[in-house]
Image (cartoon, rainbow, N blue to C red; front, side):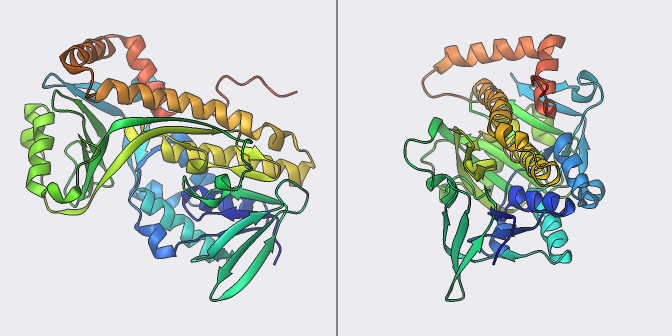
Length: 399
């Protein structure tokens, strides 16, 4: 079997890349080691920047987010038992973010790919990539007891942090930067209306961080900061809801609607970047190349911007016979990645209780939060980063 672009990974980044390439007439095949049901079952981010929404429309799969997404015009910061709204739309000249679950986005992309009759190989075993340092890359895998080889022009590694693509890069060819945070997020998904239906709530308290987000007007996603070695089994639903209330302002704590959890998990937090993101004819995108703490809602959106840069580079290669986009892919993507890493690290540092800073650290955080909510310039900086910087932010135009 042969294709132009072999995409490893059928998560949102791989599916979105495949759809954009299909729209441009570029043949692609997606290889995924998990089943389709497993991919759909992953609970992930749900806040989309306008750039990501625009990409879904460009790919022809914007109907779902337009019908089912909830537009947010603000965010709310809670500290010292007081809630402070930040007018994101007013501070950014009309920009918004949209709440739309990754599961729904993945389902939309899967349906579009199936309707177009495009090839996706799920439950592929022993996936390996070869020849990406030369002119004839290929992907090998096993399916239903048979060995297969897919020849291609390029390989797009959209297979996540633990995927085969980054692991296949020769030792010494990649530099990794990482910061591991000394706490985790205990997350609960529940079929209850969000306590703030048109804003994400970030809470800083002496008990630790809390976050109120949503997947829809009837399904909410809530988090509390917890020790990294905590066990999910130690957190009953009642204990979770009680702890979350203690981290919110009194009015919001009183208003929150609780209910049985339908999913509960503890996620570690890390900042991670691998450089470069291109190795010959292999290109990394999304979590295969970088991880951000979920505090700033940048992970899925960063993956989408990688896909925009990469799809544009492939389209330029096939349509215009130019490799300029390919040659600049890693540089362009990493510039945006590091800006998002900085924002996510800053917001994480501002909102969480760190075990080694004690009361002094809490007071410094509160002082910075006071400055943030009372300074238009500081609030605008937060808002600009939250809605997403332009794709060409800081770039020197190519000749």
